[in-house]
Image 1 (cartoon, rainbow, N blue to C red):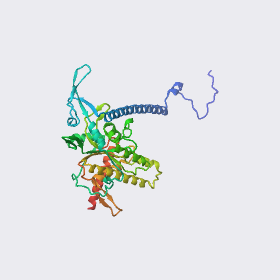
Image 2: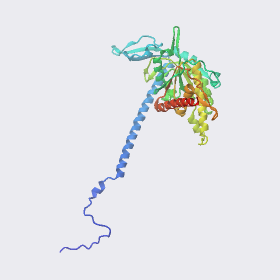
Image 3: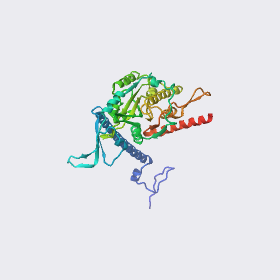
Length: 417
């Protein structure tokens, strides 16, 4: 006879007819555990990508340091160097270089066998470096050559309007392409060294010549200095006053506007141990307003932010106009400009683009509200070609802001007629 169980079952709980295996409950992953594993995996890949990016950047900086040292060795040394390239390679800038000392010759390997597909050319830029140093000009803050740019009456325009280009390239790459396209910007003479009529704006450091180009810096002036003979001109006696005065007014938030014009600078290196045939550019060194320092040094509230920004804008307009005025008086016909002061100085890229547009193309509206008058562009048609070289992520917003400013002024002028 079956014995009846006397064990009581608690009310509200029913016995399951399916037994629960203990291992099944342990091995069953929860949604939170799966997500945690996925997050850890994603973090691992992010760290790995950061390490790879850091290693790649470190390798780049090592290459830039090597290039800067090679350039300094050539420029501050005897000024002589050799280029090597395939014999089938041809570049108009190479073929017409005035600094080539002899025709290319075949390179011989250590075994004594000629390498027919590799050619070398020998260049001597030492005389040009001396001329550049002697021709370096310092323009103080009150220099009449450019301080009175608002009141001067522009000379007859070279053309109705300048040819404006935007290139997603470095300053030197844009300058070299422009020289290759139009060799007349390098003037040749039978019994004298050649000269250039192409001006390049350098976003200069206020503290030291070339900024941190010897330490792998990649600001615009640093890329110029590490690949050209500019370092020699920046160390000329005339340049000492430029840096001395800037250091004196270092805490004046960019109120002092000094520039330095370096004639016939030779770009010579394009990478580590990679030389190119030299060509000539005129470099104007101008220090942009350090907007980052101004925002850091002052307690700027939302109510007075527009006052500071307007002050930065007015000072930047004055500085950019002075640069254009010097380019004009020195006879430059083509210019390579860019996003002036939009790197470590943190000036607004849209503001800089609009200022270039106002000075070179469309002018601006000035005066009180309701009584505004159109002020024409001071430097419209003064230069034949203007190339804005803007590498990196600033290219698209710079071009868009420039074109929108021109369009805005066209609409305003059309509505006022």
